[in-house]
Length: 173
Image (cartoon, rainbow, N blue to C red; front, side):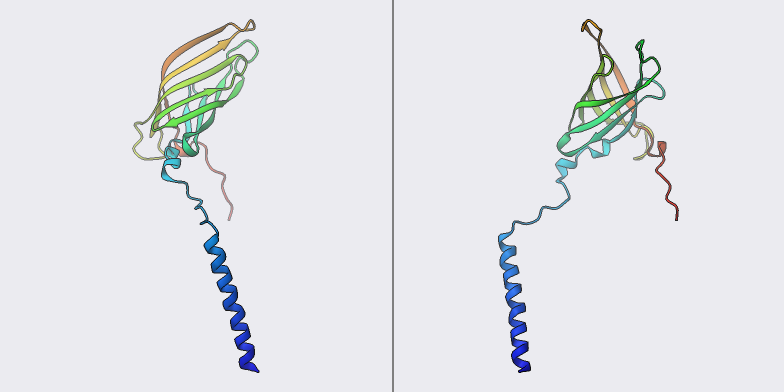
């Protein structure tokens, strides 16, 4: 009787294993959570960069397939926002190789367009100030109350902030 019981259990185990193997053969392979190298390219450029004035900055985040998100934090210069800190999120952004473009949303009648490149800067190693720089043309667009638009373009170089510029929260042990 004991041998019969062992044979039945063994048969059930082998049957289940065969069913699982058949199921695995039908199931497509699970995609790795690791994105292909092309999709990850440029992520090292993500970070915080200087902007036009001291205290202002630009946050750039490179996502999959060259999509770029981020924002500009700057001081307002209009009558209603003079000296106020304004955040202007990217409306669109793209990284193609080392070519970077972005356009911000309009805040108080002002929006920015950047067309340039990401290049190695003066920083000696990753994480140091200026390891990467954004070089290119920044166009500041304005629209007045009558919706009359004007644009002012200038060549700029924005340096990457050091990684320790905004310290991570400390964990207590």
